[in-house]
Length: 376
Image 1 (cartoon, rainbow, N blue to C red):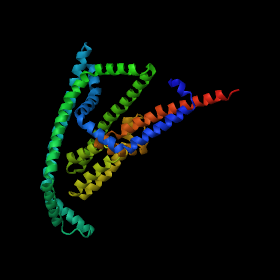
Image 2 (image 1 turned 180 degrees about the vertical axis):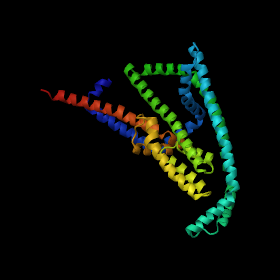
Image 3 (image 1 turned 90 degrees about the vertical axis):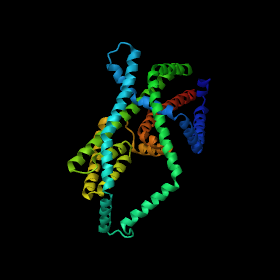
Image 4 (image 1 turned 30 degrees about the vertical axis):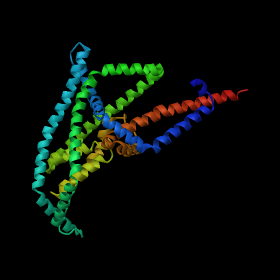
């Protein structure tokens, strides 16, 4: 039936029109669809987070599976899954134990020096002859009064946000436990998924779909691992430079720079501006040096570090990345921004290696059919 319709002249136009109608309906009802997706994500947030955690630590579990000298495949995989999760938790705790004391010390120093920072800022404003700001101490007092009134008026929202944070922590704990079960059942889940594809699709279609999933998996794994490594390199280089120059708040600013470096396009700029703002209150010359170093470091990162780490796996145009950051950020928030680049890479792969070849094949078949029909 499908092959019979496929040979008709009206078939490609009908498919194109139906696809356009579906796209139009989807775009016009995007707010409602997004609201429905948010409701679904709310119900399945722990499950989805567990899948993300399991997917993230799966490469480490496979590495342990290769090196562990255990004959039983099932036992080796179970031990590998637990070892991978324990390794990630231990690394995260070591990072916290290293950074948190520095962050606390930096915060205490910052609070204790607020008066001197205010005096320095007021002197800087007077030196720049900025009019209309009045006395800086009065401005700070007015902002403090405004902040106190804001907290009093919005105490219900603050408590609700605190409850949401607690709920998020509980969901994260549940998701972590669920991720272990997902890893332990990975072989069974793969087997059932393969049986379902074989039941619904032909052998050729199943092979193509598996190839597509493998390519997407390669893009995501490489992006996540390389992004974490890249942020660590940038944060470490930033800490070394600040230590050599004798700057304050090395731990605090380096963590800010490393974390915001994970955000594509705008992240490094935001991290640099925040770090410079903290330093300008202490010593403006340090802030200037920091900004110059940030520009140099981001240039080296963009032209040397990223190409070496990512290679050609994520060869996506800057315009597509920017569009993906805006759209994914609006639809999925911070998570969407973090995953904007691999999503853009997958869309580019689907367009260039799946959609275009299919359309070209349809065009060639149509031309061949027309040539046959035109022959006497």
